[in-house]
Image (cartoon, rainbow, N blue to C red; front, side, top):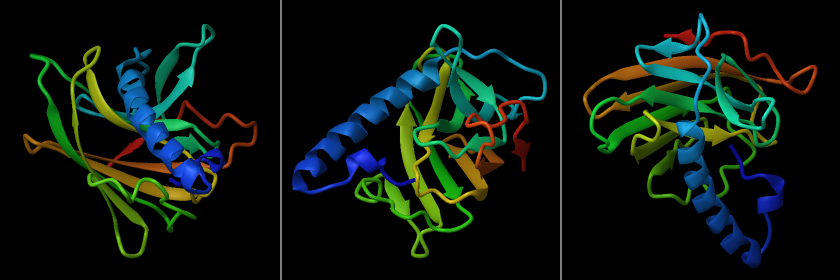
Length: 186
């Protein structure tokens, strides 16, 4: 979960990194709001789903439920939840357990809403999302230093609901990865 290579560098790049993170958060809200083509066997627990976002033939970002996340830089992955009712903020706490520590947590560990464990294998994020196009959620982007292997993501909502998903970061043979394997709900 390190910053993309183009984001690293000297002090001038630090300001760019902060700006990029702010833009990434705004992009996350947009991506989470994108429509989904519902498929049988999707990775979901009630109204909570795990998967990746991929462009369709028209270049629109679509959610695809999967347990295999391609280890391709900038690949978006995460969870989303259908939010019905009034457009009020939804608070959540998310934990991701990695198979081993990534090469770097640069840029993320500086956030007051993100905590990285001492061993570098677990990241905890506290967030608040507004429903956009009926969904709330959180999105991560694969970085080159992210370890291949088995991950576990758990998200707990302010009302006590909890969802956990196991997924794999895989090296794709064809550069795309499998988007048809449903995530494992634990």
